[in-house]
Image 1 (cartoon, rainbow, N blue to C red):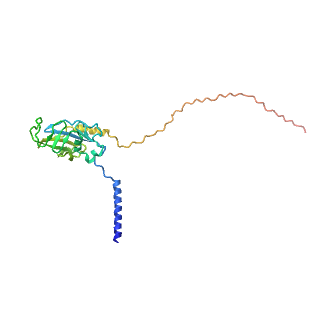
Image 2: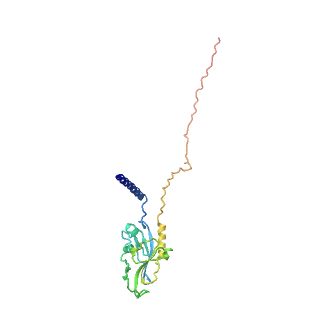
Image 3: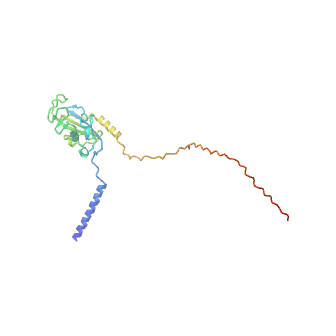
Length: 252
């Protein structure tokens, strides 16, 4: 009896697994965004001791295949446009942007903008900055969106890998004294312009309609046909008149 019960249980489990497997195939889990082919934008700025830094130049490796899927064109805007899984989904982080930008260094305690001195937590601000002489530390301030409520509730990070990039984010990397005010990036307008341009150039997702084949129409005006009746020459011939038969009545 126990054997039959075990067999029935195994059969039920098998059926359940088949049903579940079929459901999974028919209802796949949505891909983590951004997916390959997406195009997102984030405004990016740098503040060193109260001095807003110039935008990073366009990615030096932007023309080298494979083109970085997370890059900047020099307008203070990060573009997330994954072409491989390395830059898509949960891999689309601020740390990935830093990795793909040559000579940019950013960790939880160090910042080096290409062509400038390396800055470390606990060091004093450079003498050429508004906060010269003050001890500064590194922080990354991120606004989830450029519109409320996200634009009113910034979050502070120290690890660039903890920031998952999202469309419309605002990010300011700041090396500032404790308690200093950190501004939003000055490239918000550029980001909005890039977003608008991308939206207008995105191919329509409406399926193309099959071309309508119009049968060639015959011209409504019938071609002018000149019919020349064959010239018939009728020669009137005089037929011999029928022989008149005169009945002869014999007298009886």
